[in-house]
Image (tube, rainbow, N blue to C red):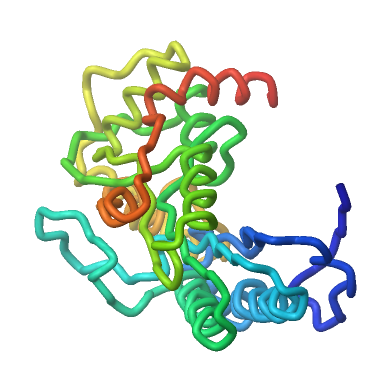
Length: 289
C-alpha cells in the first residue's frame, strides 16, 4: 500500500505515480462546511479546496487511465427551499446552493460529470446527508458533548425533519456507484431512509449517554431571544456565543431528503439508523475523552 500525503488544493504538481495501477478513485478530500461560514463566507477558499482539487485529481485520473471516479459531494450541493412542503427533496429539485461550501461542491460535481462525458470515464456523484458514526465530528459531536455535560437546551419537539446517514452506508453506496454501470453519469442522494426531528436525536442520544431528558422544555420564544442576544455578542465582539441565530436554525430547521433513486437504480439498502449506531458512537466518544 502506498501513501502520498499531499495538498490537492496546492498548485504543485501531483506525484507522477499517484494513480499508477489504480482502477477506481473515491474522492472524499475537501474543506467541510461549518456554522461559522455563515458569518465569514469565503468562496475563494472553498473553491480552492473543493473545486481546484477535484480538477487536479480528475486530470491525474484521466492521465493514469483510471476506469471509475466516484466523488463524495454533499446534499448541500443543491439548495434548500425557504419552506418545506411536507415531502423530502430528491435529485429533481435543482435550487442554487446558498453557501460557499454548497457552491463549491456543486461546481466540483459539474467538473466530474463533464470529465465523464469528455473522456468516457465512469463517474458518479454522491450527495450524503449529515453523516454519523463512531468518531463523528462537527455538530453531532458537539451535541453529544453538550448532552453529556447537561448543557444542551431541552428543545421542544418542533416537528422538523432531517435526514442523516451512517458512515458505513456511505461507503456501501460508494462501492455500488463505482461498480454498477447504471451509476455512470448520475448524481445520487444518500440517506438512511429515516426522518429525524432534533427532538428524536436529542432523546436518543440522551438515553445512550445515560442522561435524563428534562420533562420541561425551553419554549421557542426563549430560544429565539437567546439567539438574538448571541447575534448581538457576535456584532460587538466578533465571537460566537453558545447559541445564536445560525446555531438555532441548525437545531430547528428541516433538511429532509429522499434516497429512493439510488435504492431503485443501484439496489442501495442502508444498514444502520442513528439509534442503532449510537452505542458504538458513545463508546468511541467516551474513549476519545
